[in-house]
Length: 346
Image (tube, rainbow, N blue to C red):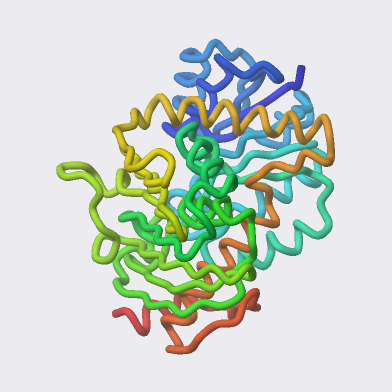
């Protein structure tokens, strides 16, 4: 059984910890947070005695096989980007595996640092885009893979939260429906500067038309001004969706509902209990890390290189919007995007 630890004891970490009620391949053994009140409250809730306020100390003493990094990408109350330092810290300690919360980066500089890390690290890293493992999503993906809707003609996907918050989920879902075909070209637009100084800095809204290597085109929209509502009276975080159109039918996954049309089954649809689906998906995402630790050939679906390609696509949407040009992908994004946003989106 693998030994596991969590860095970061705020609300999102509870979903990671609860997954261990059903995880078979590992045991949650230690936790770490700089704030002792959060650390002790979390430790008491999940009956974890090994508690640390220093990550180096925890890794050195506990030697976890899997480390969950459950922090915001920017240090709260500062402008410090912490995704790369934390991943590099785990890598230098030789931690075998890491699950890190999305987004993997927030801008060009930290994306590039993590891209370089991905080429040298021996740590197996996956991003916690758990929607990939939602049971209904897996079912609809099987429908597509088995040809029940025919050849894919177009994909449309969206989320109403700002791009850097929810685009990682949405772009990963698109990738998963097309067997991780790589994006090769994008034209995008951005608007709204209100989120540039938060814990997840980005423009408020973004849209893009993406062409993938397999020829499939996808329209994506992020933010409250562009993405459609999928249910009334719910917060913006509850409007994630992906719709795949084929020659003979379609499948459509949404936060709390689904629908599909196939020639064999006709039109079908129904509601989803997101909480239950999400609990199963977090367990399965974690178990997939243990499968990868067991067998190098069982690469995690949300592995770091794939997630970096998806974030490079998001950066391409940003830069296309800034320059009014079509961006060939992958591309080397320029530094200073946040300053460009402040100047152009003011």
